[in-house]
Length: 151
Length: 447
Image 1 (cartoon, chains in turn green, brown):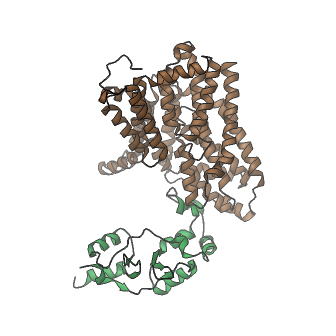
Image 2: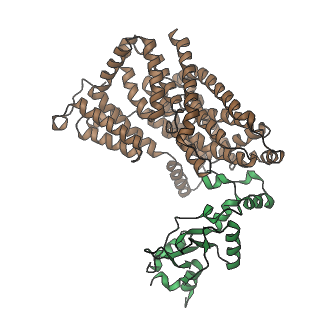
Image 3: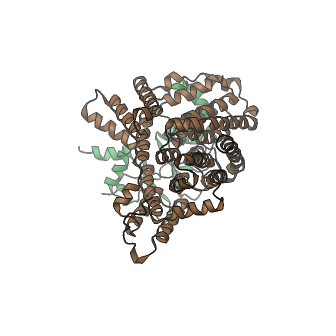
């Protein structure tokens, strides 16, 4: 069995020129925690995810190093955190584009996709290796539904 | 020198001098390209030095300075455990608040704090601790972070020069020349204080006096809670107790007859004991593995390999030859030799890694002892080597590991460090620091 079994074809996708604000709205509207990003010709560019968006609401240094183990000393409340996100809301989504997300092919095995979900990915893009066009996405919810059938 | 000992057969009948020199040059060149990890390069170089027959295994192992290796591992362990407590972040935030969130005051205090940390900790560790908090504070203040990060690079290399344990070249020099913690403090700390003061003044003139922050931004920094940066009060107390004990032992090393390597490893073991005491055996295993994983094994194996490569050229007689050439060039005059070593070390350390450079220079300087009235006569040369090699690292972005570490953090945080932009300011500032050292050495040891 390969990952095509649980793939959502023609998923909602963002354009590289879309803003962070547009990404937030799309995620809330489609109730997903990650979206693929495509160029003008439909070629896959990367993934934008909720953790990436949260990164924009945190001090920049958090994205630069792993040294900040704790931020309790910052004493920030919701308005401070929202202020930081608002400063970045009109930036293009490419600012937080995750380009190293694992890519699946239509015939990638189910067990390999499961491994990526186990490692924390919530959505995996399925990309044609030659044309780089996005064929669909596989989500961990889809995988869970498949596992739950006749369990 | 091991010159009188049995030399193994060098393969293909090669001249050991040429074979070892070629290997040293190849090792240096490959390290400089940064295409292959430096630990791999040094270990391959060491392996080839033995395979070619320049050294046998016994001579190679004897070439490794285990006092240096133990000191590095011990201090890395102590710092790795201590940093978990959040004490270093506490000091950085406390400094920012002490300056009333005034950018110029923060620049000054973070420079001094970096230099102070760096005199007790490894430079890279220091900047890894200070740079992230600096980025956070400058973001809150909405002031450019570059001047702060630049000043911290300089302060880490300057502060590290002040003590035996502050910078790896000093650790190697101290161990090889039998110089104590106190020797370094008494001979190098005075000039380092002057160099640091000059750097602080330059930093203030260039940046500090022109930086301003809004009252709201200052209020955000003043709202930071340094107490909440401490994540483990018990560990902080244990770590500061052990760190204090280790530094006291360094100071009293001559009286208690302990080498720095022993003190550092003993201190690390004591801190591990305190940190693990009362925890179940399985959890202790995880905690100890975690602490050991924090040791920079790349640096440790790099040192081991490098010591063997240098032992090879030393054994083959290259360093004696170079020492003779240097003495001939300086006419055997101590003052000229000392100042040549100072400036040459500074320029070379700005280009090449100062660790292999110092490791090569040590046996070379040692072999000059007969010309300068024995080992006592070499003292100014050791201080010149240390000051040149450590301060020289500030000259270029690739001159020291701390520079590249800060540049890496800066790049990821959107504060780009460009080679020539850095060079334009750093090189003159480095030359000023070496000129101060020149005057100091001349007045104190050569006048």
